[in-house]
Length: 509
Ligand code: MG
Image (cartoon, rainbow, N blue to C red; front, top):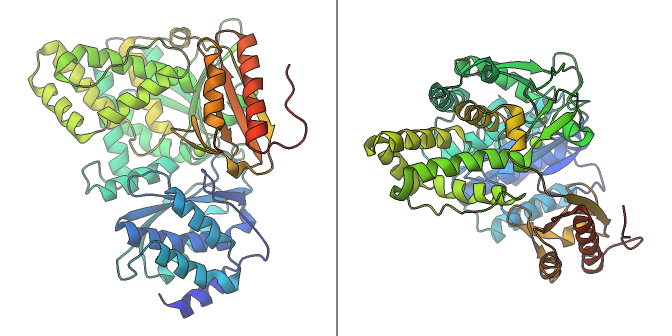
């Protein structure tokens, strides 16, 4: 470590005195003007992480659905996953160290994690379309370089595309080519092969309106569309040519306002979708003939995909040893099913088996195995991905001959309630299992389990907000009354066990 050089460069990316930031599930996120030093230091940290894991590490400069003035950064671990929790702490320490303490913190991290400083390091960098992103990603590069790391700057990428690059590079090209063309080709080939099988390929399934949140999704979808245009034509809105990023558009806007984004004309029963600002999230929606708005997101997307996978797996039958869980499609069970099955499908052993089945089995089975093979290729295994999800959904709708209303009617949400509880420090809550299980504070998950048992068809989760000292409570049950009661009881448990502040949560809404 050339400490002299680090000190010199760090001074060029000086930390504003007293500024404290926290690395959360979304990485660091705040006003772009406060992030220069954080970017430089995350470049340093990425090099240490790369040396320690002997793998390529990713750094993504984005603030997802936040307004344009904000920005953020997060590190991507070797298999495209989120940064390991102990390194999240290192990230927080390093970002908050005052100038004179920075070197010591850097050395502390290296020692604690037994980083071999002689090891080579490689970091890949991507950024979204925010005006501040280019300069901030240059600061990341400064950090990488001063610690002697090699890097590849992909420039503009969606967040899931960067995850894909990291995953490709660390699996020796087995997963795909670590280039933007590699990504386009892999997904599009699978999509076109799938949709070729669709007997219903009328205009209904050929076109889709896409709101790109005035973000990176527009750019990348434009580049990609000719690769898959045989199967689908997309009409882009909020493509960044005039509006502001995430302003009156994008997945979060549509979801929270329950209305279409600005600038998109919708005819009744027309299929539409919205990406968020860095294209790792998608929602679908339509207007019915009475002009009512219908949102299709999370669980309904999972239901469509998981019921399709289930059919294929049943078709292939005993030749694949995957537990096909038989569940009613209550909220969440389809999400859970999807996670379990995807986990199984993404294992190399099962993938090999499917590939073999696609060669050998009788006609009907072979066709199902071939479809499954393509679906696996179409999924971004490294991260949630709006473009990949969109293509999976479009392929299934075409193959099943489902209209958007028929998809919507496949499944009805259970009554649910969401509440917020103010706490002194949201960090007392940590979760696992995709934020469905509370690990800390002790006793909270047990309390929730006991409360859930009192109601039929019920579930409840708590998770800390990414940005404020608030805990979000979600509850669902067989009736609205039960969901409301359960949500209130869980809020009380959070208030008591997780350091609630202010007034105790009151019943009634
Ligand atoms: Mg996002």
